[in-house]
Image (cartoon, rainbow, N blue to C red; front, side, top):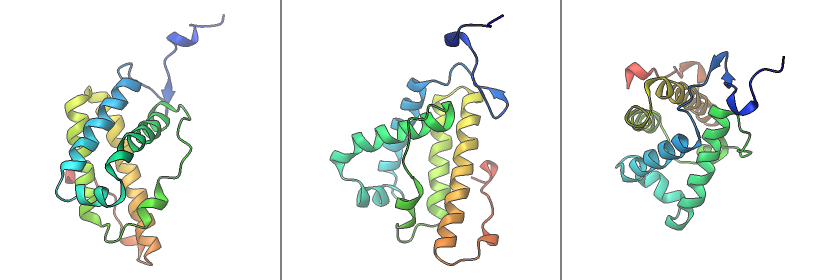
Length: 154
């Protein structure tokens, strides 16, 4: 018995089947809507404006779509290293990560079915914590003081 054809198989990630609604089109919609909000945000917009020129945004958004595709769908499309550019941002702090997570939560809740929004937020919270630890470490700060940000605390 060979099972269902590959096109009909359910992908399982972290021991759970991925919802059928999670696909490349939804990832693209989330990434583009989220970064539209980020670019307009009074706290985060200037951080991005200082590093990404307007003509570079299409390439950056494509790279972010690849990142989330690889993260959620395990496509392997992203081969970059997202952390190093963040380590060079002066003044990057708790308020930036919290605001990033708030905007991200608002976007996925607006665009995604609940089970997909949970998957996006789970990954975003993990990424934010990892980056916060790395930033603190790179600054010589006590990383034991960096607590994970809970979605309920946003």
